Image: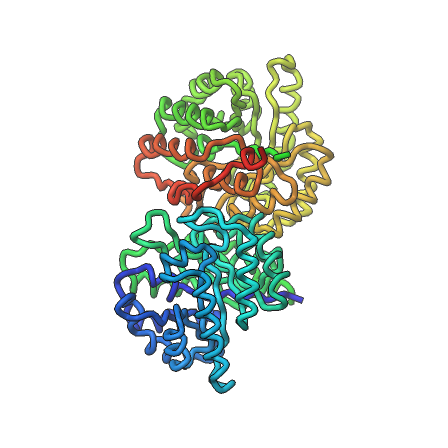
Length: 312
Length: 312
């Protein structure tokens, strides 16, 4: 019996939010279509932030509309506050992704409010969702940014992450995502933190969101797989990094993470060669961007066998 | 009690052998000196192959002489056959590194003989070393190339690796190195193969040599650490890859692997910032080469603490 692992594409949000020049809406939709055709079943397609703040997401509604037309695809969107949640729900996304930071300094710098205020906001969003008819109510996920460390504060104590995860779970989310926003995690810390948080949140699924800032991203995914995590965010071509923050890097590379999972015997349902083909859309649509990824460079191993086929 | 992990630099051999233009002898010695000063205790400084075959190593004797003048440094050299072993022992290296491939096709293509003939060669080298006075006898290590797969044959059955490791151990080597020459390994395969081989070779230490061809190099190091492996080859700047083999890539990046180990609580005795400084020697001495490495790009995490200091 092959276990399934969910790989969720977040490049259209976490990747593009760091790229000043808006990608054409058509190219975004081509990207979503191509990944869905490759077998990706969940894509974070945009962020419902004010377009003045991030012109990259001015086309959020169009992108959502296009994505919702694709069968068997869970369409999610980042929402920074209640206003964003209302826009996201109105647009009809299947899932809203909230985010708050364990690090107070990062929460202040990123969201201009305290972490406690962000938790209050999250509760407001949860209440708003409760007020919607069940058939028009999106799932609610919440990411805990800087769960492993913060470039302002340095290390973040695990006890704070666990406490915040408990509060977030109590707010009624459907999923918690531990995020290593700036590459402070390592396999040992991943194992202990995921075990502690999972024990705290009473059955709420815990997913992982790793950046490869210091080269440990893939190793952290492997460590999280060891602890039973079965859902991972990733970004095609490792898109991301911030032009204003030297050394910042994107999420772990979707293609490489799918390869990791399949090589380790987990079924992702995703065709790696089709993912690699999808890179052409980014190459054309994001001229000048660095496109990372080792499997795309080297190709699959000779006689490579997907997990589901190995087991069959 | 902090456990120690040996990180051995192999960029001067495995990296440089893939670079056609010889690096200046002075730059090689600066590199060795700088890494030794950063705390690296074992460096593979050259290959004793015929200079006509690899002009990069025409200065092998000079490089060895310079390296031997450094205190507390184990100087090793690759030797492809008995002739090379004689040259290496004559030069006074502390350790000879032999290599043979589990994959017959790779052994033929790399060494122009069968794997069985390579084992016979290894036995000849071991006998030659036995004939030397004990105080002039180098240690003998043997790498098993393509232990996880081969770009000619594809997957390599673990049972063949285990059997060959047993033969190599019986030949009287002081260390066995399982090498993922072309990036076919994954954390699951690493765990099972190292456990099987360690059980087979009766106390002979088993080290790891990973390439990052498909992005799993660091994850494979972490998996090997889990199984108790405490010695790893790595290459500064991830140097390597072959200009004639698209997609080929170098060893795991020394700086990133030291960071992984220290972050996970293993003492390497190596100063990461001093290693990062050492990159300048490669930048100047190898113009045009791609210098990889994520920690060098991002810097250490804020308030980063080395394992030995954490424990103190």
